[in-house]
Length: 607
Image 1: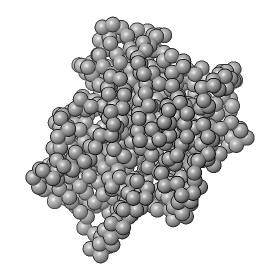
Image 2: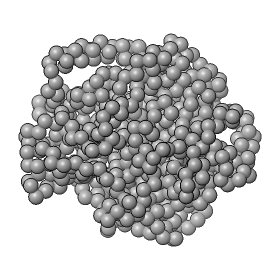
Image 3: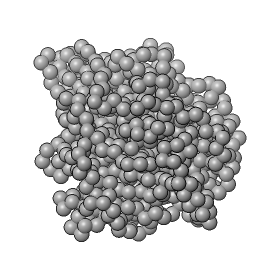
Image 4: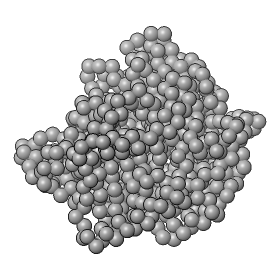
């Protein structure tokens, strides 16, 4: 099918994030009706479908409601447990301001499966962060006061507004050590009651780790630095010391920025997390601190590394012996920084991607004493032979090779530096307060879009890299894909199957994003099977629920967004049957008045 570039939609006057107060419900219904009655594949339908995917939901489901099964049935072998989905809930206030999807207040959803009763109960609540309490004191009316890193306030204070680090706890969710945590890319997690979804409060994970490290012996917390010229390193140390009080005192940025992506090592029973220093965004070096916690949140290991590169890391990986970072190179944008300080541009305008080098740096940082003893200079990255912006990692593992070294494999999604754009993520235009789907769907080459790849690294017995390659996971499915997931029982070891959100290309004006399919890739031979929605529907991130036995014995769950009908469904797929007509096991309908905007990352917890 030929691809089409969507022309700019500036002629459309409607503001994005259609989220007026409840008294304007008739307007919502009229918009949805318009989208429903439009031609199924028109430019207008594409615009409304994309825009309504990020429609605010102000109502909460404080109790729980049973979901109606509209297709199939919950299988008897489906395990008891809860699927939690994090993401933004609201994008528009009552005073003319809208925010970027990444700055929307965290809206936590839960689907509790009780197979013995054949029911699934749904709940949803906003995470009561400090920013949420300030911007919606009564829970009904909203006035945005925080700019957020990606937004500009239209109906609020611009000049002199230093409320930038708006911790909205909207990116990912984790249940560990008896606690349910909502995470954001730049602040401390918020703890939430796993049953009621009521916010308990901030969870000082880094403070807890710092106290534990102080009490532990020296081997528990190590700081490893780069071998950079001492004068240059001293200059960066001075700059960091000058920046920290400014970032903390003026912009209220935490000294360490905890990443929202965590990892679980099932073999060792550990939770792995990583933090960056606040000043890393502005300096040509990156300071990473890795934490490993046991099942009781006791700190087991803390390692610190200073990398001589200006990087932005969203997701990362680990193996038995290494922490693995695929470096997305960035640079400081001086004109953008000045505009951001005026309040007329978002703070992210201070940064720009740095495509000056045609390779991708892969940092293998020593996790184990054996990796450290190898003598390899970890501060020198392995340069993967293609330029790629790392998006999400599905799995990573290492195995001994015939030369007495290690073979390291990463299964992940990546896109081009040309496609990734700080100022236009999700096609958001802060000047016009609109979402433009053409940005996410216009490409000049196949390699621009997010795609599933394998990074293969061969190390010899001294730790030196003999070769590094990047290839597609599947030539059968070369269309855009992201959010790679695996059977969690195969984390950190050789896996055969990857599941990911993908684009079928069936929509003429939305051929690449949002996704409408789930693809299952067999990495052993590159074959691929997929399941797709029908009509004007989108899907979110897939999550694998194992039921025992083989690697693909289990179910894949995800949310389907029928935005033109103002409906959300929870979809259950048989992982073994993806690609067959009977792959759909069950579909459950969220009540229409509780339909929610697109979520980001989810978590399955057994009971």
